[in-house]
Length: 445
Image (cartoon, rainbow, N blue to C red; front, top):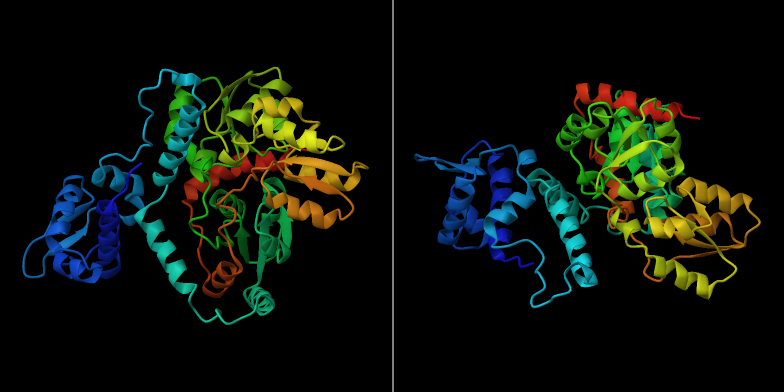
């Protein structure tokens, strides 16, 4: 992959127009060039490309310049990169006759898909919000100690009538300040029952969206707007609609790791903990299961129904290999293996236990087993170790880390409470449809 100054200056110029013209008032290119310290002629060449693609449009006259041709929420990073760079795909192997037998090619192809999904999920609006968050980190709390910062967060929480929900994969310091710590299912159930008027969700975007769907009257905040989920972004509502046309008699089970739009097109949602029960709860013999192919495979092994899966996956769990588990088993022969059902089929096959994160938490607490090999995101091990001081937990040597789950820091939580940011907003029609699917999931015993 080769990225040059072309894309960097294009994005900076578009942000400049957004911030200085609001996307509606023409901004002279000369002023943009001056602020960005780049040649005006260079920007003119880039804007010819952006104009042809209907990203910007020119306004003539004395007060002329450029404005955005689309809303910032409709301008995607991937489109800008493809317009301004020669190639944004990973470099292909040359002079190699191994083809699909080459592990480098397989890894590189997977990396290419992850990168493509990521850049196609980020909008100009997201980039603008990221820059605001980064700038505000330099604000009034830089001199506070960690203890003082936690006290400020607790104070703001009381003042705002807020509750802090934290996923098991979050940073240790975020886990420790949680009012409630859990997995997607536990936190989804809580979201609709808690009395507080504000929910601060320390997780990723689809989790905060689920909380908003279940409690539309409440304010739901996501401390980091850029905390997304690559797997959730691997399927869109439009793609699911096309799949439903192909299999008109099938019912749709969507993993909770999806956008609200996708949930709205589904018959029932599920988590890793109740996926099998969700599938069995439907009368249809044919089930469309999106987006995780590995969880779909696990469900197919546990039911007699025909499972039609999407090709999505969690990159964190996908890259836990059988050799990783075998190596840990060699090093710790007395340990039992518990893995997440998002892991590959061959990993699931050798596991002693296949469980969601709360299943792992409960097993570790109740079991007499003293050692566990844990096949999931490394954040869970902090909780497992804290709640079971006499037991040992081993991760693969290449620690499985979700970068999105690690984006939220104490500073982000502080600013979220102080400024009520970032608010999750969802169309009422989508909320109504998605709520049905989520409530069916929650009703499963």
